[in-house]
Image (cartoon, rainbow, N blue to C red; front, side):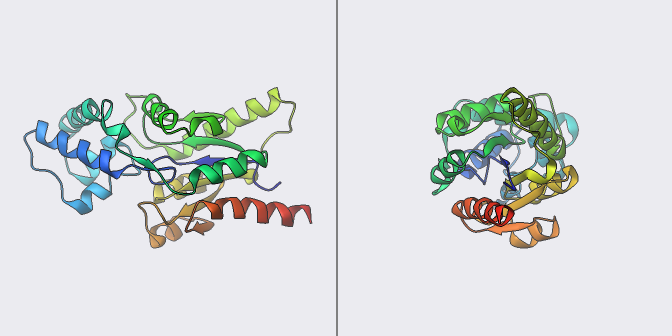
Length: 232
């Protein structure tokens, strides 16, 4: 099997989350006494960490950005995280990969505790062997490190099951933005850029995505097609 481990980004890949995210960003700006960002800026909140978005996308100074993150979370952790929906085709894709014996994990820039609440609420966690994400105090977006941490965790699980180690060439990262593709490239794994999320074809290609997919079903096809060629 070519890909034994599939790592899924959360926002824009497993779950359509802009309603909750956008509402919480507007809430944070209102709490700061500022007018909300333009729609094109709101869209760029999906992918990197909140701190990076408030500083790099909105130009807030560090202390104000820290406050904005807290204001964002005061709404998101109560209502915002449930203002979302699973993308069509995701449950079927996860089920098919699970039945094929592919190990799956979530790798997200969303705080790990919050992300787990989301995937459990939407019934996704039952397909995942684990979930990797930053702590609440982490400011930056470090997708490369999280991908490598997921591979280490997968190898722990493989060893416990008496299975051979999973190499980086057997790992596929699925994500919708350049942060996923760049993180995958830096970690030495392949990336499948999904075009149904929030990124663009151009940014995913420029960031080094090996595959581009229009639907979750195509992820299953990639794994099955490559597996078949490997066996042949």
